[in-house]
Structures are given as structure tokens and as C-alpha cells.
Amino acid sequence: MKIDFEKMGGLVPAVIQDNNTKNVLMLGYMNQEAFDKTLETGKVTFYSRTKKRLWTKGEESGNFLNVVSIKNDCDDDTLLIKVNPVGPVCHKGTDTCWGEKNETNPLCFLSELQDFIETRYQEMPEGSYTTSLFKDGINRMAQKVGEEALEAVIEAVNGTNERLIYEGSDLFYHLIVLLTSKGLRIEQLAEELQKRHKPGWKKH
Image (cartoon, rainbow, N blue to C red):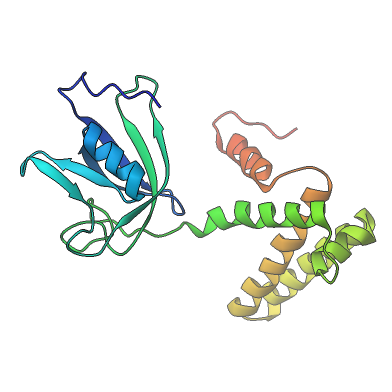
């Protein structure tokens, strides 16, 4: 990895991102020594411009930033470091240095779920309900989507919100299974809805 430490007097900014939530946690600076120590220990080490020394994030609090990956940008003068944080990142006790909660957007789980279902489709492990759906074929998968949609409608009309969420979750799951069998992704549905949201969109 080529890093241009000389462009800004021996330092480069390092953007710290949570590997799981994708949230930006903080910004620090590294010199060559801090970068080398980060690679050696697997814990993010910065150069403190005020204390004029290296400091490993968490060396006093125990809230280390465990490195998952490091990338440099197109100009080789900025780093993007993905981490698994241990505890709050900011010295003020907040999850991020912007006072934000470091939480995962639940919608992102739909992509993770489809990744998992695609693995089932490729490996077809015995005893898996998802495997049984794939083996039963497209007609059965489509039928299950219809059944779950009907159950969601029934709960919406005559049931409770809790049961509607439960049946709606079943509907989403079986729809993703159906999409996977057709080589499609849930993101493609999101893209279609995004197109429809734009001014001037007309129904086909």
C-alpha cells in the first residue's frame, strides 16, 4: 500500500468506520510510525498533534479499535480504516465523535438475509427449511409468497399490529427466497421504488 505521508508534513487523515454498522466513528491522524504500529498490533494507533506522540485508541479506557481492513484513497493521502470498536469511541463517552448512536439500520439486514439465503441456495444443507423451499421448486415458493401475503392482509384487517409484523416478516422472507431462486436481489426492488419516487416517473 502506497501512502503519501509527505503531502501534509508527515501526517495523513484516517477515517474510522464501523465494519458492521458502516457508521463513521471518528477522524484521526497517522504518521508512518503510527501506521506501522497499527499494522503490527491490529489496533488503531494515531499520532497526537497536541501531545506530539503516538497514542493507541483505548490505551487508557480499554475501548480499542480492532482493525478489519485498511484502504487508501485515490490520491494516496487519506486512509479508510474499518474496525470493530470495543465500547464508545469518543472520550466524552458517546458512540461516535459526533455524538451519534452507532446503531445498525435494520433495513440493511435484508441484504444480509439474502446473502445468507443465497448461501443456502448454493450449499443446499440437509434439514434446512430454506433448502426444502428451493427443492420444492418455483411453484411452491410462489405459493408461499401468496399464502404469507394473505395472512398479512388478514392480520391487518382483523388482527394486531404485533401479528401483522410477524406475518409481514414471513412474507419478506419467502419473497427473498423467491427472488434468490430467480437470480434477483431485494436491492433491485429498492432500486425500482427509487425510480418511481423521482418526479416524472410514469407507470408502464
